[in-house]
Image (cartoon, rainbow, N blue to C red; front, side, top):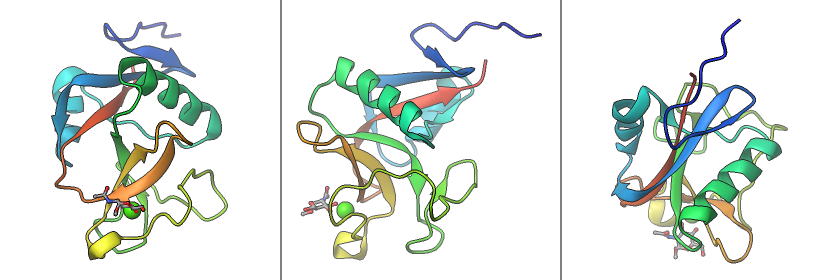
Amino acid sequence: MCHADCPKGYTKFRGICYKAFNHTTADWRSGLYCLWDAGGTLAMPRDREINDLLVSLKNSVDRTARFRFGLHDRLLENNWRWVDGRGLGTGEFSDWGPGEPNDFDGNEDCGEYFEALKGNWWNDAPCELRRKFICEVRP
Ligand code: 2F8
Ligand code: CA
């Protein structure tokens, strides 16, 4: 039985460690920062409980900023996939804001938390924009 701890600064939930990064902003390649920090990926809020945790982690480091997480439709428009390759299946948990995802200007393929003062909803936004971000790693 493995009881490994999380890397410093990460919070464990159901065996996975999460951290909202406040000190660095990066474009879609922010996933590399997760790899370099602790061998992880951008975080994947696959259900309401994980999503609630990520919202509280990001809000505790910055109450208003947008934070990138590990969801994108870069391969095929409107085919949303987690960064581990699994699809965001229809009927599965999602928390898009009203009218999202809207692929605004035909250039929004990366998921982020926005409207932190309203609903902490998901938005699709341009992947090249720099954002704070949330990582996950399995200890
Ligand atoms: O109204 C929602 C809309 O707001 C902005 O576009 C005007 C966002 N754009 C960026 O964050 C760059 C859209 O993603 C968002 O859908
Ligand atoms: Ca959008």
